Length: 221
Figure (cartoon, rainbow, N blue to C red):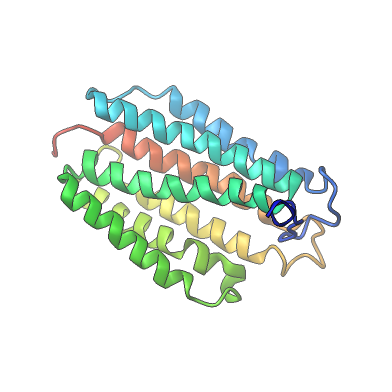
C-alpha cells in the first residue's frame, strides 16, 4: 500500500525526471490559487451566518486546491495526485450545493437532488475515453456543463454581476483547451501549456466564488 502511494506519476510535458523541482513552472503557477483566495477573503461578506461560513469555506478550498496542486507538481507521487484532485472535487460539490441553497434559495431536498444529479453526470462523463482532449473531457466535462448552466441561470435571474458565471465558463473553456494541448505541443514548447491551466483556473475559482459571496442570502430581484 505504501509503495503504491509513493509510486511516481508523470502526466505533464514539463516533467523530465522524478526530482522534486522537475516542474518549476507548473509548481509556481499555483500561486494563482493563493492570490485568488487572498482577494476573495477581502470581499465584503454576506449578512447571514450560514452564508458567511459557506463563503469562508469556499475561499479556503481555493487555497487548499493551490497547495494540493503544488504538492503534486513537486513530489509527483500517487499520494500527491490525491492531494491534487480531491480538493478540486470537493470544491465542485460544495460550490454547487452552496449556490443552489443560498443563491437560488432552494430547500435542502432540492439542493441534495442537484448534487446527486451532478454525481450522475460526472460518472457518465467520466466514462468517456481518456484520449479525448488529453483526459480533460472525462475529468472536467461535468464541471464545465454545470458552470455554464448556472451561468445562464445567474444571468437570467439578474443576480449581482449577472455575467460573472458566464465569464467563468468562457475562461474555463480556454483553460481546458490549453490543458488539453500540453502533451501535443511538448515537442516544440518544452514546458508545455499546463501552467496556463493553473493561471486561468485561479481566475475561474475567483469568479465562481465571487458570484457566491456577492449573491448569497440575498432576496431575488
